[in-house]
Image (cartoon, rainbow, N blue to C red; front, side, top):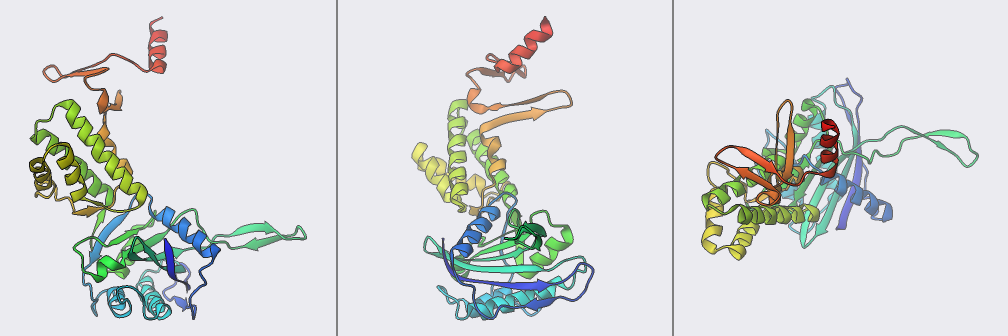
Length: 342
């Protein structure tokens, strides 16, 4: 990640107040080692679970809704901002407009980070907050400090500027709220001007279900189906580690290489059908991938979970009787069972 522009503005507002004040920095922050370290920290926190994706409802902005798209349309040329400080100040003022409508909300620091990665341009807009702490001075006297809270993100937005500028039919916006209450997430969504946000976990689950439906439609033997699902899971995890979206065509290529072009086409047909409606490009939620490689279930008195690779090996399932036979029990479980019998 190569930082191109960076600036921080402060929004002052106490909880319960209806007015907020913008303290705008007149020029950009220097891009030094401290800035790069904070950028890496923000990126790491942002790519955790719970991400939403979407597009601007009006890519060129509107008078009624958010003016953020209009500001991007005005200031971003496709490869650079004509005046990043002016753009960010106008965005911060727009943020204040929505913030003031929520008396419970508090202010914070707005971090604007334009960076380049893999030939594409991105923009981070992140709400950072200070926390109260105590330090010891050189003379060992106590003093109060207010460092940035960098162990969690409150609200954050990332825009793929290149995809937005080229009007790609992708969800070029990704944003997250952390554990923000509903009223806080609502005003932030309004500030973004995002249409139909999608939760990454929900999109990943739809992909998992489509992969299972494909295996059933092709009547794949258990071993082949498990190999395919694991390959899909590995590909998804690779994209998640790279912090990049997964394209449906990536899965189709995997199917074509392992099976055939006809089956790859069939998978795309299933995934894009009304039953699943998987987006052409999704951000992967790691936890939602478990169903691809694990079988699990529970009731009030029993919980069971195992790798699907074990089916036909140390675990056998009889579909006619509904019975599951486990041949090789974990040692700890076997020890417990032996003690109960003694």
